[in-house]
Image 1 (cartoon, rainbow, N blue to C red):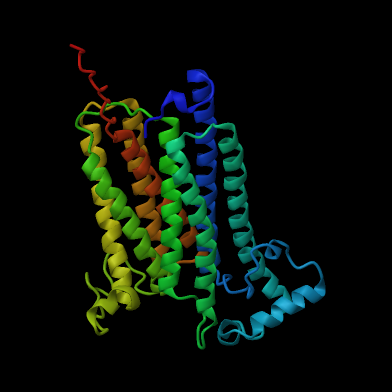
Image 2 (image 1 turned 45 degrees about the vertical axis):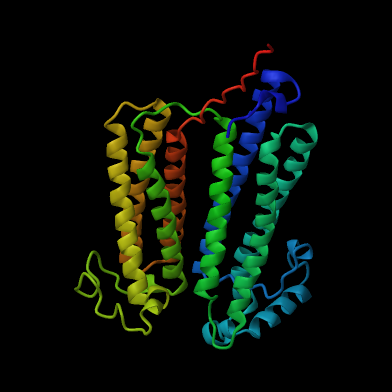
Length: 365
């Protein structure tokens, strides 16, 4: 997105300062969303997400301040199926341990909202935000608020009879919206900081575009893998129960249910997508580095190659160890870092916008 110097208050120098400040602010917000995704994964993997039974967007920022408050929250938790079916006999100290992770997750979401809104008002009032950027930032703030409501919609699915966890479908919606917010913040920040791209003839743009889509799809498949606990079984690699394709792949009917509800199919699909992502990433890196590219793109491609190698190895290690919460959380963080590397490389490879040709004024006869 090119920026017009005339949209800033004091010429080119003020524009550069404003653009840098706005870009760094957006990068900081993107980093906070990244931490939020990791915290959300840890919350899900430790079973902590259902420990808070109330949705109080304002007052919920305060933790329990007395023993009576703790007892009240614990009694609420004892009324849901997860406690009866999974944590029957848990004492108050055990409840505190799962409570604090979920509370931190929700508090971090509130902090992201403040970290986005307050500087947005400040920059907007000072005229430091380009006019064409303002609608996008306003939309991102609305989507961030919606994410909180979607999070509660997800948590509420764990209150259903016989539920010990949230709905995998709602989990994936919550994760998907977080990825959209993260990618939009990151891309916008990079564009603000580097409005004019380097020309990169022969850059593998289409491959990078496909890679971003495939990496995002793999993360979504990972959400179903986590939501269905599919990583707890078939803990061998590369075969599943001695077969390349598990025998139980198509056990459910109609067939499409297998893709999201059959643990054998869900895990196999995640493996397949992860392998395809890794191969496409390596091919993209090779294609890009084989040609003369600007330093920014070469660095981004090198980082992409390292990220995909580390993430694939981490995924295999997580699987072989039965998806323990620590490794699984690192695996989710690695997935977002891989998506980040792909987005940064795609941004570095983008084409410059065509120059605007001034309108010709007809000569007066």
